[in-house]
Length: 204
Image (tube, rainbow, N blue to C red; front, side, top):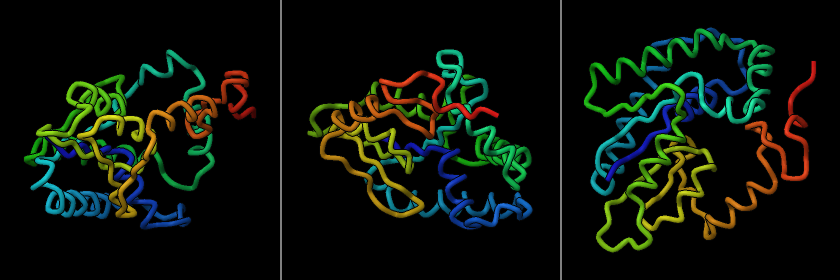
């Protein structure tokens, strides 16, 4: 039983919900820390009784996915380089806040080199998911990432978007996964099954 928080997704979504299109602003470490800690507090208060304690799942560096598929998220760095936002400073702040959570707060933090939060959350769910929800420990995924819909095949798993404050439910998670594989995911640089691997990579 746990509230599994997709750290990078939630903290970035909180930031962009706050600043909108004003990406030329200076990133304030204290504001980012305050936003995320306040989100933790609110969501723990809302879901703790039913789902237990918070587990923060954070992306590690050098993800194995880029070795398996070189074009994975290849466009994101290009987009960041063109952005006015100081991404280097932002990532440094996120790393600092993550380490503070690990060292000074009562929350569990899982951060593994070469693994993304998706890998961590997926492993926990696959190890503890059940087909029937009769007496099973419940797990709540806090993230707006629709890739987690596939984990809703387990009866004891729910997903909640903490930014838009809405439940993410799908009546056919297995069908959603199959459709996602067939159509691909442009955000992750993964093309549909009929296209070449590199068709979504930006060519300078």
